[in-house]
Length: 180
Ligand code: KMT
Ligand code: NI
Image: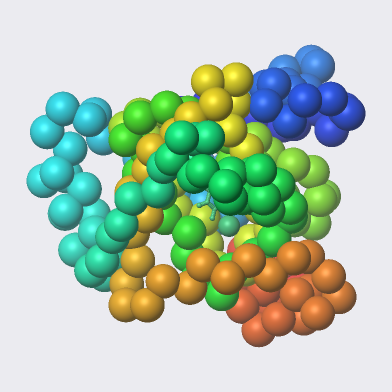
């Protein structure tokens, strides 16, 4: 897993878009934004993932295959939707089984994008209320476990004045110490 500031330049979203000069973002900085990361090697991942899942109350999971073959007719629409800036009212938890991609998270209050490059064995937790988006990279495929507590709350709420005052957004800002 590699995290760094995104260059915000136009062009193919699947390219890395490293800011020049490069500005890495380390796990403690992500943790300050309530973004949690682990690496659990795929070989024998089950027990370690189970321990984290138990600890954090993730009782359920399913798999998602983001690829042209895996998604069929809805592929283009899904790819477009994933890259629209949004928030959820619950955590977004992904353990990458294969392939790779980029999760972009908004730093607040700077509003800069931080790009998190994920690959097999990476576990990422985005907190409820954080603005983010996702894109495949040039590998064009990723398979991930989606973990959740009871009901999956995967409705994306596109960023707007309404989401700015959504209770989960306000709560998020409060937990990272940024006044709304
Ligand atoms: C989401 O909600 O943005 C996704 O599930 C992205 C694909 S998971 C690798
Ligand atoms: Ni999302």
